[in-house]
Length: 187
Image 1 (cartoon, rainbow, N blue to C red):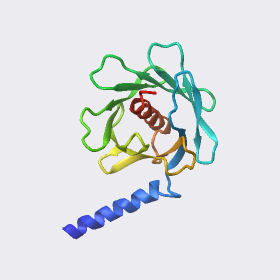
Image 2: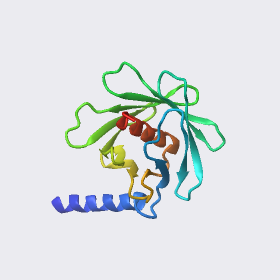
Image 3: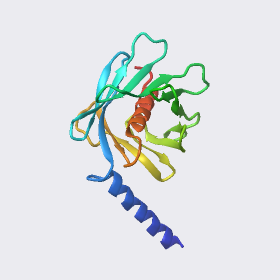
């Protein structure tokens, strides 16, 4: 029994390397650390250095608002801070105002940072790891859909996001932006 479980965990790690390891199937993006001064716009690039998504920081709003657009300028997601909540919460909306996901910081985090991501059409995922240093995963239990790490880029103010094939890349990137905004809210 113990041996079977160990073999199963070894196979899980191998699958994880095939997806998220060097040369794996995951799609990688480069993000700027400390992205936001509201009003700033920035580009998200793929690992080949091509611009893929634009983040438009809207000014003159009471709440923090960001728009994630594709390369043609079409709105994919809108990120807005929700006011008057007990816990830190931010909402990600679709282009027609429909709720796509809600990101909340966990109240009690004894050893690691932990956030919950509730998708309107899907499971509730957790982001766990060292959020402040951009070393964490997004997933459900051992099944991860994205990995965030600074180790993939030499640039000091950049970090990478690797997303499992078949995911909504724009939505997962929006989640990482929200987590970055909430974790570094003092800037």
